[in-house]
Length: 204
Image 1: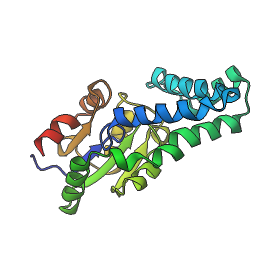
Image 2 (image 1 turned 180 degrees about the horizontal axis):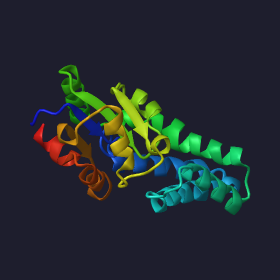
Image 3 (image 1 turned 90 degrees about the vertical axis):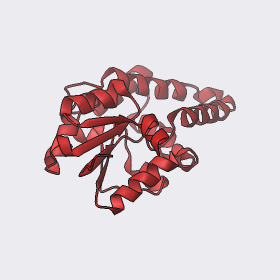
Image 4 (image 1 turned 135 degrees about the vertical axis):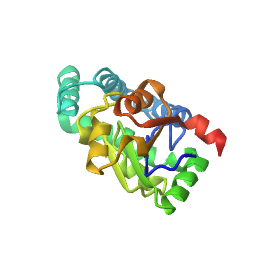
């Protein structure tokens, strides 16, 4: 592999396997709310949160997370605190309990190995990521989420901010992700090399 000064790693689908995580969480949701039918609205809040993030992934607004929350509060007529609690429970707290079961172990081990050789490891996710990194016992040199950088992939402004902050030449950086339509386009727009995680995993 070419000598890079830094790797930019996506999290969901790259350091973990997205499909089994989603299946497990879907079953967990279904079983939980089967016995709580009066709270079924919460499932739709979660569904619409994901849809809003997908639809706004190139939003110019710096406060797009606040716009998402406001829209859900208005549409479902529930307090903001309730929406925040639902999101915290199902998007952060409960997934943390299972993420270690579905890590891409060879990819994670490779990242730790190259980090020990001096390659800077930076995790960049569209979703909150720091607690997830703790759950899989990985300590990158830095971690960023779309909310912090005020844009979502494939908009490359967030990635360019990371490169600028660490004074990295794009030619010296490898971006590893699982979605060509997001991670791949983001890397291309920022001028970094891109590698699909499945190809990388097969090469290990």
